[in-house]
Length: 179
Image (cartoon, rainbow, N blue to C red):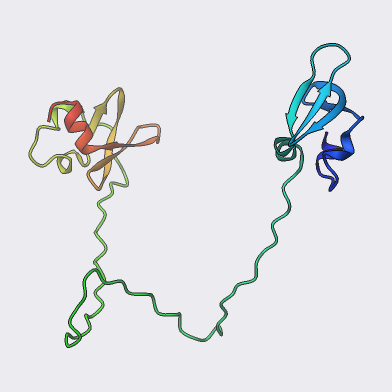
């Protein structure tokens, strides 16, 4: 079928031809709308959708790289970023100064201490400062044991002694373990 499906005159070119379509072999006896009818030597005639055969047997056309529509000299400054405003400001108001949000300081434990005693997570979720209190502690969460090496947006990143890193959602841990 690969030989026929990519041709411009497909499906007309297969009429009367012996074809093998994924193990179903027979002669194409008719073309009805968007289907071809294949009759095997013994058995019932089978219909195949022409568009589906093209999808299955014709390799996709190669995608050519599109040239960039914007060009600027290498020495020029980058284009200004668009500014979106949520509400209309009075025209007399001064333009707001661009403020860059400070990047939060990440607390990451590079060398976890696996000699600490293992604490069950259900013993920590009830604490007022959870999940912050878990940072640096060796915990057991649903059978996974490791040291909490970072807190990211209320999620605990836990590294096991063999180096495997897994994340657990803090609010979900509170719900599951009675916090």
